[in-house]
Image (tube, rainbow, N blue to C red; front, side, top):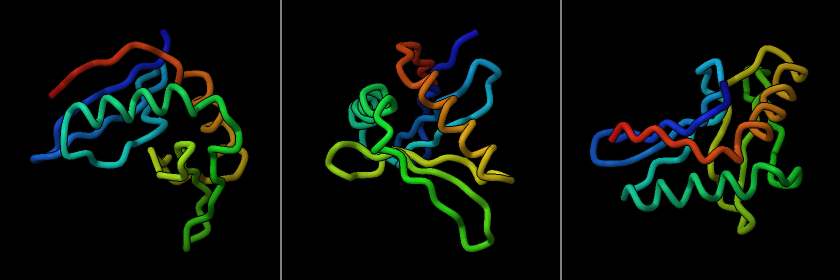
Length: 109
């Protein structure tokens, strides 16, 4: 099974998760004020997930590795979970690259 986008409403805002084929969340979006903006965010992940330069590999204050994905304009699109190692984080990046282009969207708004 391939990955998919899980589009949902959170209060009066919208957001999405990119999930791998095993239903694990691999990228969580920023919050958007409209559903259309969230859908544009999904399109941006599709476009930018294949560009290495769009990934920022980071380390949280507690030492946990994670990454963010940004659009061409530098605006953050989403971020990963906290990982236990840089190797696990790198696998997360690879999973976003593999699943990001999917056109499958589960609209749970």
